[in-house]
Image (cartoon, rainbow, N blue to C red; front, top):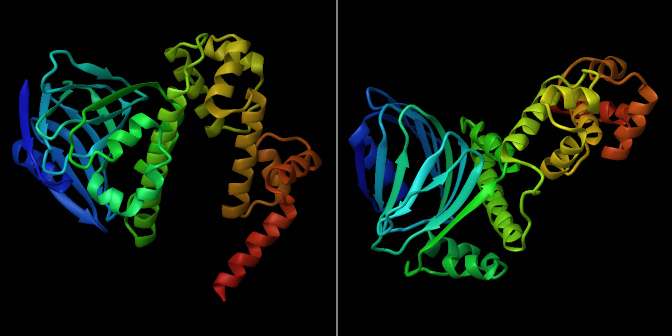
Length: 345
């Protein structure tokens, strides 16, 4: 096992200390820094960005070739960390604890420690890790976002206003596959333009609100349905991704049940839990979203689009399109054409 000791005064300083011990090259684009590593210790990258409202983002997309124990002393700025694991797993404990707590794929946690207590993070050998961490430097955050903090539940409020780092807090959440879709969108923002940089900042703020909202729900007892297992939710999510990639296929509840090995009742319950829609409603939603994207970004006419996404009736398509978006497909297409022509002028 390789131990990395980091004593830092900022997020950027933390990454620089990591670079000193495992190597790599740092590049920067519109405030987004990337540490690229390809050596005997690890292969992958760590991205990080700091915003002027006391919030930073760190993303790990990396494989370590030996177990890595990261001992982190961040007492000089001691952020409140909201972490989500998209792939692989890691383990965490505070310095004074003897046992690690495992943070598995699609699980989140909220962590902060007292000023004089180290975090211990254990990254396993040979596992592709994708981890997203939003850190809040509370003194800076409270200067600009104080009005939001008063709306938090009691446990989160106490650690948000703990500017002197006197409280320790660890919350390890259950599986939350829904959050992965938002994390993935954020991960795909390249930050190559100013508009993307602004989009990244907005997405981080949105993801932070999801973390807080999820904690609120769990405090109220909104847990995973007892009839659904973690592995079953993962199967359901994979089936939803197939629908998204190929919306024109003639799906049926019976066929999806046979493909996934799950009962029709479990499929319905899982789709309602993950997407707040029945299976049929989800398929229709994906087809309509695909149709809208094709109208915006292709030269296909409406009839071609209707049949390319699996509908057989243009009138039915027009009816449900207007119900969802408040505008007919013809009006929407006309609006897109007018906008493009206006931009050309």
